[in-house]
Length: 103
Length: 97
Image 1: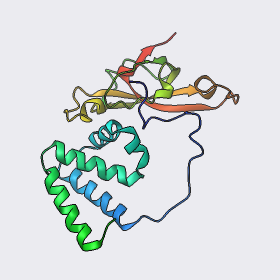
Image 2 (image 1 turned 120 degrees about the horizontal axis):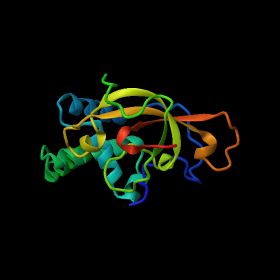
Image 3 (image 1 turned 30 degrees about the vertical axis):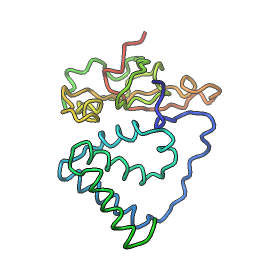
């Protein structure tokens, strides 16, 4: 097992923490809103989302920004609980890409 | 808050278990195996190790603030009066003498 990719406290080479403020992008605010809505409806618990992010493939985890990890973990929970199917998500994604262009 | 069932009292020395097992664990790696003293008892909470996997979080677990000397946690840390406080659930703690 050893330590998970999320559990990096005290690891050498991590570098300093970026403490600068940054503006949230619209999609990040939307990700937070969806997260709140899923919590209010009792669909997800914070601990479940954390567990999913801990279980992600490490390269994928390292390659994602904070809110990208949030979105990926919400997607996994919605699939796990059979609220959405992979097909439904992919279809909606294709729809948005057509409307707004490739991300 | 139900402190009466707490196994440890403030001031007691405790050692964090060094367990390496899968699951959603809130005890950070760097503090496992370290010895500190109970600073305060927060009360009992649903167990995140169960909640993380869709469980009901029961039975609830007592959560403590445990204080560690920085010099005992990190090599080459030489400011002796500095301490680090970490919230740790009771089932991760053993008595230390």
